[in-house]
Each structure stands twice: as structure tokens, then as C-alpha cells.
Image (cartoon, rainbow, N blue to C red; front, side, top):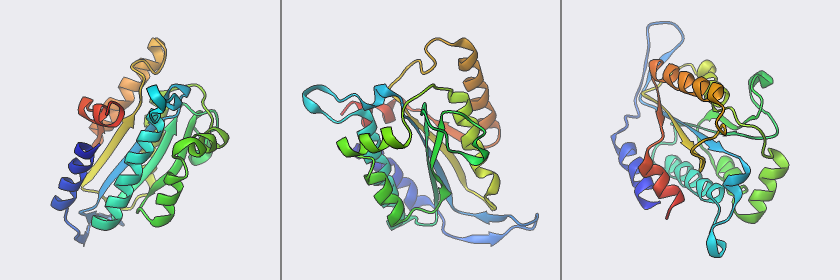
Length: 210
């Protein structure tokens, strides 16, 4: 987990804090970064490891909390969102996407959000997640589409748009080729619009395997 946190700390040092007016309409040019955490909320994520080791979901929430805290200290004007997919309940703009739950919209991190992420940790956190969101069907394509829509109300030209997926499933759609194609298509669309989807093996090793 240390390597993952160091990655973001190094990035923070390189970010500019300046803003300037952008001549093309109401948008502003900004040195702000943005990051969307897209987290799998399937039942598999809540299974504890051997000898009572934390579940993948618990470890993911620990990483999310660490990044929120780091951003508050070093880059408090950056924007972060937390979205769950594979949920039973749906909560997103106009509820356009089933089984996608937007826990935090894109906004600056703050103490309240850190507390809300902390509340999702450990056994009580798993219970809260089950009560609030539950686990249901998965459509990664819909989840990616929902994440892209979070930027629609952001009147800033961001320096970076990043999307990081956390999952323990190699086949989230259980072999459904149509859903697989939809997810690949949406991921390609995001890259074309300047949003970087990061699903690096090193990240997964750090979060899930240590």
C-alpha cells in the first residue's frame, strides 16, 4: 500500500495550484487534478482473507481514505469522486444507470467525506455498505458511462481526468460477451475524451495482495 500512496504523493508535488480565466465561455483553465474511484461492490469483494485478513473492500476503503486525507493536506482543491458498481441499489444523476451508486460526487475532499469513507471500513462498514447499497448485477459499461457523466456539471478545464477501478474479479460479467463489449467500448470512449482509465497490475497487487 505504501507504493500506491507514494505514487500519488509524487504526483501532488508536480501539480500547479494556479487558475486562469479561459476565454471560451464559462470554463476556467485549472491546474486541478481529478480522480474517480470506481469500486466493485460485489459479494466477492467482502470475503475476508485467510486468518481473518481484511476483505478486498476493506483494503480498498483504506486506500481511498488515505488518498482523501493526502489530498486535503497537499492538494485540497483537486476533485475526487467515489462510485460503486455491482450494487443492488442505484443512486446516480436521474438514476439513469441501474446497479451504480454514486457515494461522492466530484468535489473537493473534506473531513466529512473522510469520515464517511471511514464508516465503510471493517465489519461495521461492511454491514453499512450492505444496508446502503447491497450487492447486485454488474454492468461495467454503465458504471463507466455514469462516471463520465459526473464531469458534465464541472465548469473547469481540469489538468487530468483519472478513473481508477478496484475489483477482485477478472470476469465481472461472468462471461457475458455483450456486456464485455459494452465496457470495452465505453472505456475507449473515455480515453478519446481525455479521461484516463487506470487499471494497472501494480495497483491491484498493492491493494489486494499485501
